[in-house]
Length: 150
Image (cartoon, rainbow, N blue to C red):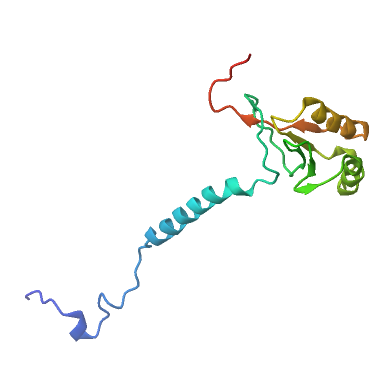
């Protein structure tokens, strides 16, 4: 008996057109993920909170922290900011105590401009320490080129 090949379209069977596709096309998914990656890489540096200051540079490693600390900034004119809001030195401690819902265990970062007087930064740190805040840190910038000490 000779082998007879039948045409699926004429015989009523389902042809290639009606079968579901068993392969997943991941190219559009990869394209979307790459676009999202680029968007987040561009916007992440813009999300840093704070007053623009010229921070001193150091080789110290970055501290890891699970929640965002409060930032006290002293700009090059000597003005004090709590997060992005200007504040008087006398109002700083009461405002921090009201914000700090965790008692004195709240982490506070002091950001001082490189041009500001060192005594002004120490005055602000002294205010915070005398109020009972013990988790105070100084923020610096990372070194882009070798540091030369004079």
